[in-house]
Image 1: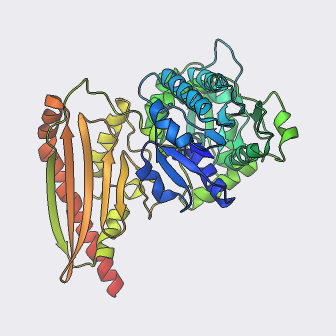
Image 2 (image 1 turned 90 degrees about the horizontal axis):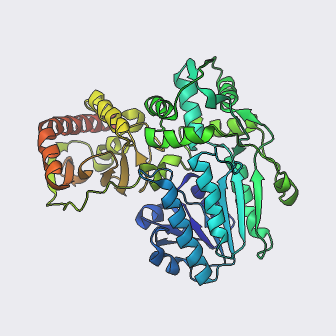
Image 3 (image 1 turned 135 degrees about the vertical axis):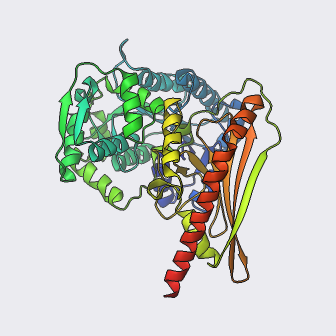
Length: 480
């Protein structure tokens, strides 16, 4: 079977479930090198993009069933048109390849002129997939509750950080949340339905609640007391900026999410309960299960690890990228490579960037204000990294334990940027090398680099000295 969206939140959970069942899985990925480190040995990963129709035929060859878990909500441009084009390409390629069934996860909502652009696009994608003539099993879900999910991360951050919350109208709109485990179960059981039949299933837990009630339930589970003050007007733009400053949901995603929350998303058809052998969990149990992972500071998959969460790379209007500018420095430490690499492995997230953290925070805030990802994404796990992980406003591009970490920038910059750390053994210890690489986009890129060059040198040099100190401290502690 073919799985799209395997780097996303739901797709990543589904991939593990399919592998645990011993099923043969082929994943379509724009950056296959980021996904290969996360899949089982018998899972195939093929390069492809639903926006590039020519890349789909190889991925679909010999496939019987295909999961379509793709969306462009994180895109910086017109995500509706990107969603349409991706669905058209997928539908046409699926028909040409002889795929017999498409399984799709969309959103709950009634077709109505007042429907948000996000939910309207989710319904439209399903209609486009059906034009292929291939049976489509469409699931429509509301808020997904699970550690690392977009909605749950927003709820968790708001409740944990704000004892008093100013609540706009959307906080009172009814939804029917569903646990991520139940979503995965529905997607798995869809493979057991007759292959020649398509259907629409509305799925949700037994509770119809508002975002405000979900936040209060979360607060109760965490033994927190929170006050919520309703206000009559707070525009999606203001709400999204507020969310971007307080939660990991940066402004661009937040605006689209908030816009969709003004529409009720409740189950009106109970067909799914009759067709599938699944009894969805209630809200209380769903939050309890999510907190189990939150207490371990780890989520199996996170919304921000999806490559769509970083948005599309900016268009530079034909500007040429010139010779890369490299700023490299090294320091020797008494620690062996494993101890020297430990602070590098733990960088970012709650550990910060070891030097001038206030300036890193200011840079993240400015990035949010211009539609970037900011620092709120944090990291998936405080100790471990994998290729493809989101790390604040970076992405892990290469990772070799105790040897090398390369981060690709996803903040807004006039060019492309990387930050690399390398550790090499030497007599009596290790050499730690830090390299900043910048590929400027035309004149503005050069101006940006040289204007900030003194600040960057100061910050990077301070960071490297702190990493060396932490490495030597760890080594000394191990010897005591």
